[in-house]
Image (cartoon, rainbow, N blue to C red; front, side, top):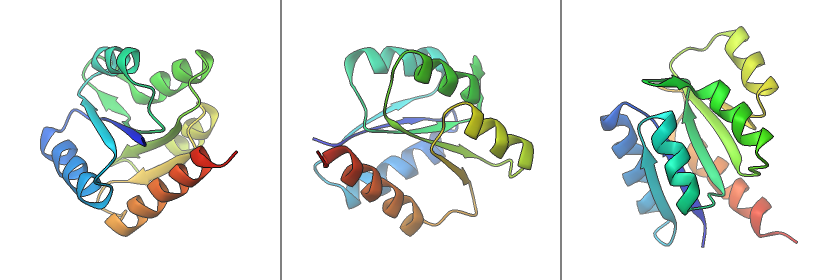
Length: 126
């Protein structure tokens, strides 16, 4: 089963993303976390294939969390999701181990679905 974790403190955005992904991938297991600590707790109970990770979280930084996850051996596809389309954030996302950098408001649902489908395909290939 394909597993997706959404780490986002904007509950309206998080729920909208979850609803869209659940409608497009009805058999996927989806979980949400609104903070670094909630994300770490969710990771104890699930091994996601794909993590959507906001940069600005109330108890930390999503880029630092991505770095921690990679250091801990988490091999999920990580997509940084932010409103800040800045070159320094893109560069830092790449250095922190993120696979993708998405800008809220500029990334379409079809792009999100394509990213998730590619992640699913890469996880299910031998």
